[in-house]
Image (cartoon, rainbow, N blue to C red; front, top):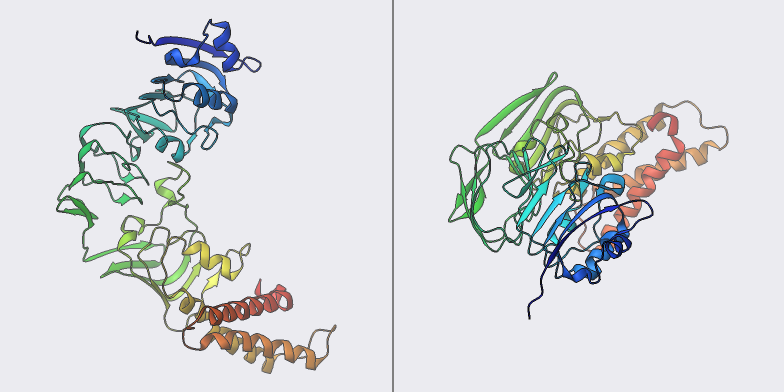
Length: 406
């Protein structure tokens, strides 16, 4: 005796959840459903019901005419159906959690309503609208795959766990590939691709001799792994292009001009009067291990909503700065000098303390940062001591120089 799968369509309403809708449609056993078409409003409890009652039996889920609450697909609320082969997303969905996609280990086809303004699908593969970013390739989709030449970016985990995908061809247009993307498929790269190549079927970075550009009156040059920014001006805020939890939520205008070459950056050098706002300017420079400010120029941080530490973290988010302490030590050479010069030239002291108390505070700030000038610490204890002194120094500056420094 064989189990016959049925196809069922239901329309959900605010007070009509999936369990009740299936019951009113005459479905006794939800596990007998092979194809489920849902319209109306889908809530989290409906996803939980599907996962609990149709995990291994549901083959096709069509939600193209449905509405998802908040237009965001869940992650842990619905871990996926192990038997699901095809899924179609509605036109209103604006965000799809990556874990939702990965959890469907037998998925062969992804569809999207044609009127969706954020996503689209082509040949069962999920893209952003306009197909400039390849978001996800179904895990059980077989054969060889040629990435469309409209694609400039392949997002994190896009081809992960695609055991049946034999080969992938990457066009010249792709200049950004995320993390954990490929999983064993033979890779071929178009010879004109400016960023990537392939060696024995594996993805590799292509060496670039030199590339240059401008931001206002400033010039940037990337040569031999060194990104040099020189001149006078402000580096603006940019988008967080490497946010691993979102897909397709930044624009070309939101990227820094060197972002397509970010994986080639091993060192960043500033020359001149550079003002840094502090948000994601060097996003994606994951191979960068060094930052240098030349000519003893103190950088001006124009984003006053962030303190110095936050600016460092945000501006260089994604960089693997092995000498990040050395970069922070830059302040240890400048701040003691400035504080002592201020001590010598300042007239008087705050009215709520004596001159001795004021001098003691200035000397303590100098000590906190001067301690960081010592060679790199050799133990976790030394690292912790340096970190505590740095935090104390910044806190003293913030409390006592609020109007001048922050």
